[in-house]
Amino acid sequence: MVLDYQEESNVKLIPTKIMCDKCEDIIDVLDFDEEAVHFEHTFGFGSKNDGTLIRFDLCESCLFDLLDNGNVNYELIDTTPY
Image (cartoon, rainbow, N blue to C red; front, top):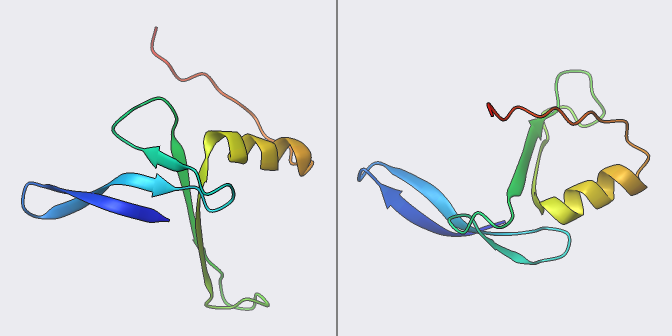
């Protein structure tokens, strides 16, 4: 859940504080200590949730807790250029 915004170029608002929707920790996006991950998906035609939008934010800890304890197969790929 986005808690605060910063105005950028008088046009676009960018989030500066985000609350994890699982543990409710506040992540200061400008701090770079921990990231928040935003999920947003609209279910398509024929789905039992047809047309429904699901949206939530997770801190890194809760994301990996969900992945590791939820038996989700995932792949970590290092994309750093150095």
